Length: 378
Image (cartoon, rainbow, N blue to C red):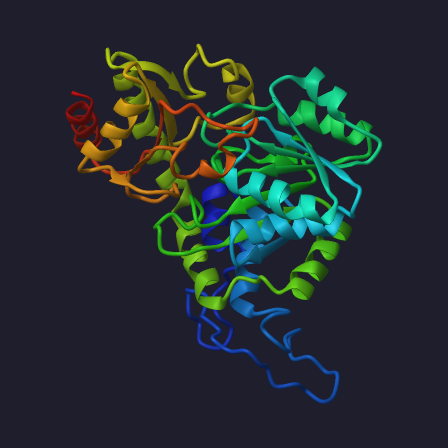
């Protein structure tokens, strides 16, 4: 079996058989000539159903996550919607993390709930609470680890045991970790979800999502819904994600190096009340994260002693960090989750603290990043 770095560069990306191009071509076409009525040329007829550039990405994704089938979507939420609508019917129930990504919560609480899907937010770090939340009509146990933005850690193998004992699918959003740092299928997950906009793309220049199924039959069901619902990744977007994947390993090592230095700086700063990072030995999920992750990632959250007003000021005083939503790009970002990415959960059980700041630590010079934070915190 090839190492991760080799798979990232070669899986699904053999040189083009017609020209020898080492980069996968962008097949910017909607339609493919047929070899007679009903005779597909290479399996392609119409690019919503399949496109060679997207196929290359989907094969790469399956290889990196050790799955049976990979599928590329127009966005992370499009991928999530496909899972929910493939598996759930009106009257079914799903379990969500107690601090789920705001977009996931909005999709379930504001869209799928109107369709008759019930949901329960549960702190996934408490396996007993998860076990108690399972109902006869539960179809999906949805996991994020680390979570967004509180960086909670869930025991994927433990959740898989609970889910499978109850006949429930375990779906893991692996966006924060990336397949380089964590591979949930190897730990028992049935489906892995990614916003490929983030670390997989890595350059803040593409919107995309992905599903990787552990089982070929489930992968076929998801592929049917991908085609039927139509929220597919376009060829240029698929190509951008493929390009990003090639450098995923080296980028993630630099993200982790920089994040660890930022955490060290913040932990000693008098204006900082707490630092949330699974690499800290004091983090409640540290031991689990150390067991199931290669390293602890490039996302860091922290709270400020001065409260919400200070948190908002700090977000506005940086110059190397960019005030912006999203994460996982080469450039460092800062945001206030309560007013930005997680505004949709305000007033719900998933509401985040108003003194919380979230950092997506990029790959710039670490001294520049620390100097920037020091100036803002001053």
